[in-house]
Image (cartoon, rainbow, N blue to C red; front, side):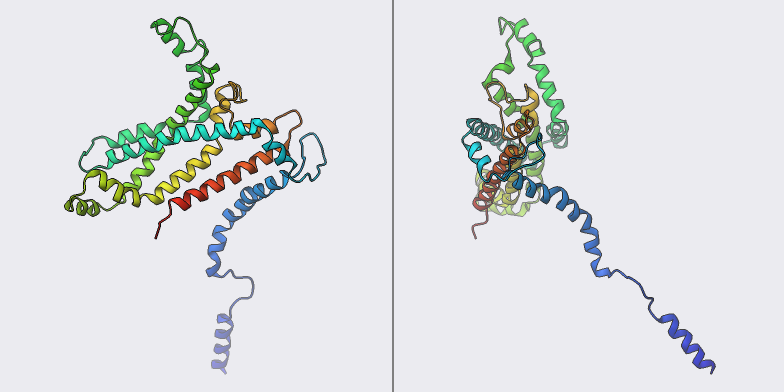
Length: 313
């Protein structure tokens, strides 16, 4: 009888408790849930809503809106200002990206070369990367102060005899455009150096040693070994720089009057989108159409980069 009671007690203790128990195999879904929820709310939904608004005449000054179809896009592509903004955006990005990737590639080869064995490469990398840590608003304010009518540049040029009188540098379209290109290059080429150096240091030294045994020179090793093995890194740099270039806003906006002056020489896509939204009526539908056009243009170019830089085999 005692044995029977002991068995009953043991059975009751080992019986699993009732209630909800989360399967350990599903812990991964629990961990990624905050990211997925955040992406759906703040990533996917805004994209969907922007597409939807671009087909309406929504404004800030009206409660109701109507579906207008492609009317916003027809007006947009018929507007010379939009075409000017697209041309400026591409020009500002290309003219700063070409020297950016070129100088960064040369500097990366020098810093990682086992032949040159340059000293203090860490200090040089720090110096080149520092501009990337500065706020764009601070950089725009700095260069505005430098090249203003009573700024240090005018004072130096006049006192040194290089100019007879002070100049309105930021009222010159060519100079202002060149200044924006320089600032964008100065801010980002240090980050490009860091990324390229990370890719180059990941290439096995034995490949270069084998090539040297076969009689390859430095130029041949660069084009036949370094560049092909850097393709994934180059794709990342090209795409991220393209996305950033098509979204160029802060430096051109803050450097002058916030309208792309002088003569719309630094008017970019995002400045135009902001001006449509910040107009007296708050044209949300028209501004969304600009955003969608830029999004589609960026996607097409990004897919082109993936296609042309893909592995041929």
